[in-house]
Image (cartoon, rainbow, N blue to C red; front, side):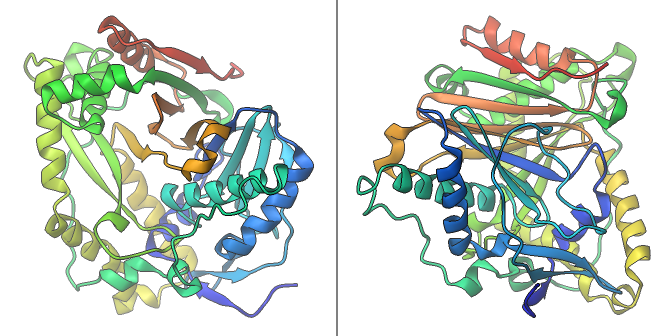
Amino acid sequence: MTSNNWYRIDNVAKVFLASVSKRDTRSFRVSCILKEDIDSAILQEAVLMAIQDRPQVQVRIRRGVFWHYIEDTDIIPVVSEESDRVCPPLYDPAKAMLHYKVTYFGKRINLELFHALTDGTGGLEFLNILVLHYLKLKYPGKYGDVALHSGASADDLSQDSYRQFFGNMSLSRSSKKNAYHPGGFKLPYDQLQFFEIHMPVDQILPRAKSIGVSLTSFLGAAWMMAIRDEMPPRRRNKPVTVSLPVNLRKYYPSHTARNFFNNVNVTHVFDRDITLEELALEFDSTLKSQLSEESIKKQMDNYETMEYVAPVRAVPLFIKQLVVRTVTRITDKKVSMVLSNLGIQKPPCEVEDAIENYNGFCSSSNLFSTIFSYKNDLTLGVSSPYSNTAVVKNLVRGLADSGIEIRVYATEVVR
């Protein structure tokens, strides 16, 4: 049974719904690693408590005539030990299902979410709420006074902030060239492989500071150099483009638990010799110019306009999805990889001693890397659809050769 509460999905969610596939499930995972093995019964109880704080995840996505919509559902989440692939399919229009999943393995709590529900920031907020409830249940009285809430109302958390802050009537087209795509042949059976790369913050952050760039720009440039080293010489006239999701809550007064991000692109053509330091400075300058409020608003107004054009509103859903899917494929060709910095993780200080680390992955049709920092551990969660692992090896080798201690873990794939 479902309630009569329903609302329209945001425009970013429409892209995810139109472009979901067996390989790119449009799901992402955020994980918290504790310092002791997980008790499944307590975790189950904690999930039921967490969804009272974030009822925005307790929904089903339904198909309408012109757009998808979201309605509340009373489907009960069931915790299980991890056994499925990372970033599993969490949307099937023919099934009544939740679009998130909580699993555990050893000391790790995994929260998998369909990206149409929320973005990385919203996912991490829900994960931290879940972890706090788990610790309160596991240790009654120890964390009783600890709270984790932004103070936002239910309406604020459910707000479509794209509609709230954007939407001028102007359309523009991107004229950027197709980017170089590393990796060659893709894995069979719509598989992805995942790499978890760890390094000390106090070893890599001084490298970025010595150049005068952000950690994101330093790592973005390092990824570009790793891609360059894999490029055949005859293809070095192709641009290498890194797409970076930007949390728009940093620019607009929004507490939404739904999607509220934008992608900005940094591009370089390796038509001359360049050092990592020079490229990092160029990357940082380009990124800062893209992150001005004026630049972001112009991009988002153009994107949000889609919903308000009358002929578009009247087109049946299946035609809209064909158009969005085609545009998404064209856009993907202009991107070499995605680099998403989820930032420094700051759970309540009272629970820090119970938490070992955080990490996460995102499904993708391209190379995709997340960045997490917790205490002195910086973690890259790399998703790749390619059988060739040269780019990842180049990145690790380059960082290791500069004196940074690197640990790498990888999933097995069926060849």
